[in-house]
Image 1 (tube, one colour):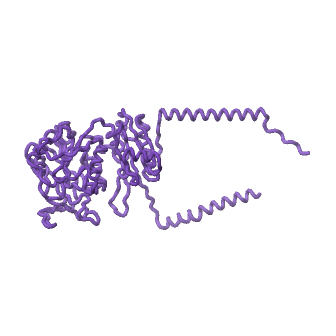
Image 2 (cartoon, helix red, strand yellow; image 1 turned 135 degrees about the vertical axis):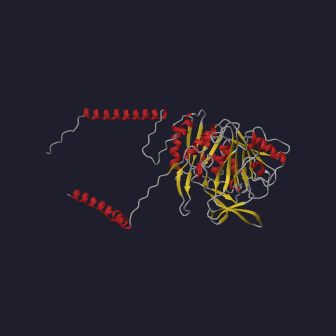
Image 3 (cartoon, one colour; image 1 turned 60 degrees about the horizontal axis):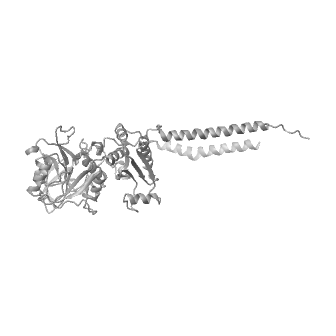
Length: 485
């Protein structure tokens, strides 16, 4: 008879081991619960990589620390998009730094909650694009996915994403929705200006929407012959006026500027005088009755569209250094060599330029004209007249931004290249909203390239096609032989 094998463990021993396992499991669960509770109450993040490093600049940290109202951040994104990862990590970083910030992730392709968001923020179903919505007590700002990146367009065959502007735009949005001060912008009307409400290609409803998202109310301003510029006008916008202003209107605009007014003036390609040219000359700005061309920087297939990519080192254009603006038949706007009148002390900075192949064409008749000069041509200026020029204007200072083109901010071109960014920066500089001027730099996207010769590439093919599969097969054969023994 075979001998019975001895019992490995006694009944008491088995019960003791089971009891220890149960107690250990309960202890592990308790520890996990406590760790999660502490994590919810006291969040702490650490970083193990640099390329996806979402650490915030001191400016962003100060803005977040100053929050006193609840801010909802809604990441309304297609989760399959390449930018969703960086946006998600950045949103979580903002949420971890303040109890006032609540983040919600919604895939706009899913029904239910996505429909509620579309209805609340008046988004058009079927025309969805990924975006991030900041909402504070009914004031909201939307950041489109297309705004979150900078691109290298030097090679039209391969457009590369070079930088991620998430922190810059997120911090600007926080300041915008939490600012309790309600600002007002007035669009002059009655002189052939672009319509700020109409949704047509030659209207400016997209620009108006940008102002609204920056917590700026938009109002039309009828001709000033019988009325004055309202006292609550923080920003006066003259967008593409084609008819002349009366002497009374020009005098009222001049007085508004002399008392610390802010003016955003955009000139159309139409070459008729409006009287604004004479008014701006008193502010050391010269607006030409001409057209500017640049055969080298003209848009492919459209000689009338000029792509300007040279910018001055100014708060309005500093963040645009790696971007460009699309102008349609612009005219020259530059510094007047000798100013006159009450605004002689105004400081003028030329902002945007053509390339060295730029040409100024004047005396235009029947589509033809004379080339008056060649070289780098100024297309826009910023003007400042205050107590401390060039440093930081006080509350009584005057500021102007004048651009020799109005169509570049029309609906048809507003989202082209850096046009939208220029509008955002110009408006916030005019209103002294320095926190919204891109002081948070874009985060460069690291790129890695491995250069190999043709011989090295052939060796790599043999490694991955021959050696690696053969090694796996050999290992499996050795295991099979060992088990057969």
